[in-house]
Length: 51
Image 1 (tube, rainbow, N blue to C red):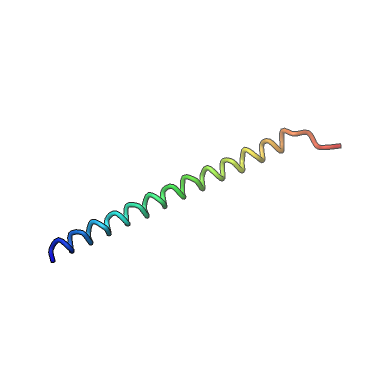
Image 2 (image 1 turned 180 degrees about the horizontal axis):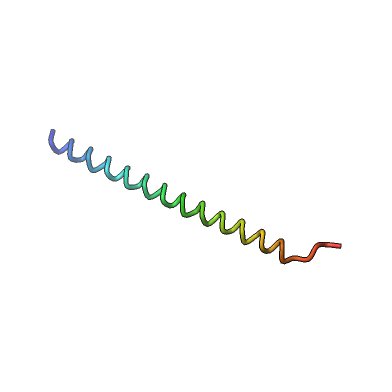
């Protein structure tokens, strides 16, 4: 019975760590997407208007 409890605790820790990693990755990707949007704005500003 004790071994089952230990396995459950390990699985819970693994799931928690994986979910935390996914959250941190989502935050970093969100910042990257915002940076890409800013780059696109700069590109559009640099381009001359079409006649």
